[in-house]
Length: 235
Ligand code: NI
Ligand code: MN
View (tube, rainbow, N blue to C red):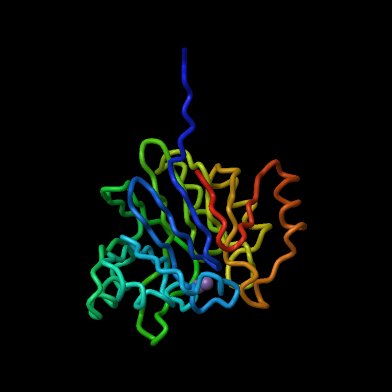
C-alpha cells in the first residue's frame, strides 16, 4: 500500500500591505512589518509576534514601521542589505547583511537577494542602500518575494538562478510599484503562474478593483490570490 502525504512545507500569513509571517522549517520569518501603522490590520494590532528573523526589502515606512517595537520583544535577527542592517545594528538590533546577487544558507533554508527597481530611504532620512527582493528556497519549496518593484527584465534571471518557483508574492497596487498588467508579465518572466498579490488597498493611491484584476490573471490561465488580512496560505 502506498501512502501519499501532502504535508505543507511553508505557511504564509498575510498581515496587510507587504507584511507576511512565514513559518518554514521551524523558523518564523516576518517580512516587511507594518501592522500597527495599518488601520486595515487593526484586528492584529495587539498580535504579539516573536519572529526569529525580520526580512526587510527596503527602508520605506510602510515596510519597516514595526521593526524596532518587534525587536524590543523578541530575539530577532534582521536580514536585509548592508545599509539597513548597519542602521538597525547601531540601535542594538542584530542582523545578517547581504547584497544583490548574494545567497546564504540559513538553518531554515536559503535566501537569495535579488534586484528590485524602486527607491529606498529610512523614515529618518538615513540612506538605506538599494531596494531588494528575496527568493527563499530549499530542496522542496521555492518562493519569490519581490518587495516594492517595477517590472524589470532582471526577473528573467530568477528561473535561471533558483529552483522552480512554487509561488511569487508580487506588488499589484500600481502607482508606487508595478500594477496588475505588469505583474502578469512578471509572472511570465519568473515562470510562475501562482501569484499572491500585496501592496494594494492600504491607501487611496493603491486601491484596486479585485474582480477586474483577478479576471485579468484568470484570462491568462494564471492564479492570483488577493489575500484577506490574516489569511493563511499553505505552499
Ligand atoms: Ni517602497
Ligand atoms: Mn511600499
